Image 1 (cartoon, rainbow, N blue to C red):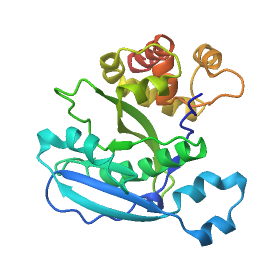
Image 2 (cartoon, rainbow, N blue to C red):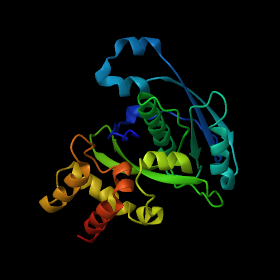
Image 3 (cartoon, one colour):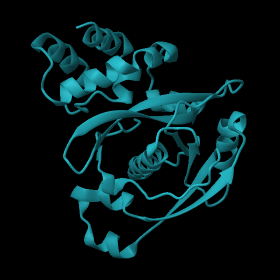
Length: 239
C-alpha cells in the first residue's frame, strides 16, 4: 500500500536559503546522510531526522517550455534524488518550499522502502504534450515566526505508473476538476484544521478518513475520494 503523505507544518527554518540565477531552470538535489544526526534520533522522530540531511544542489538553466520534460529526464540521472522546477517569475519563496517538500516526500518514500523519482514545483507545471506525466497539487501547511498558519499548493509531477501506484487501486480522478476546486480545498483544509467545520461536514470527512488513517485534507484523500471532498470544498466557497 502506498503510504499517505502525512501532515507536516513547514516553518521558515525548514526552508533552504537559495541563491538562484535570474532564469528558469531546474534545482537538482542530492541529500547526503548525516551520521551524527542519525545516531541522535529515535523511531518517534524518524521523519525529522531523514529531512535533516546535508543537501547538495545545482542549477540547470532550461527554457520554460522544456522545464517538465527536462525535469523528467534529469531526475533519473545518477546521483539525483529530486528535481525542483523553478520559474523565475514565480512567487518569492515558492521554490524553497517546493525543495523542502521534496525532501519530505523523499523521507516518506524512504521510510516505506520505495525508490521514487521526486519532482516538485512551486508553480503549476505546464505539461503540454507530455501525456505520460501527471501533475498533483499537494496542500502544504506553512507557519512564520509570528505563529500564523496558512496553506499553499506545491505541485508534484509523476509518471503515469507512479501516479496509479500512489492512487493505490482507486480510479484516476478528474484532475481538471480538482485543480478548479483548489481555492475551496485550501479553505476546507484550513477550516478543518482549526476545528471550524460544522458537524455534518465533519461526519462526512470522518467516513472517508476511516480508522487509523490520516486525519487531514491531503492530496491523497482528495484524489482517492473526489466525489466526497470536492462538493465539501465547493460548499465552503459558497458559504
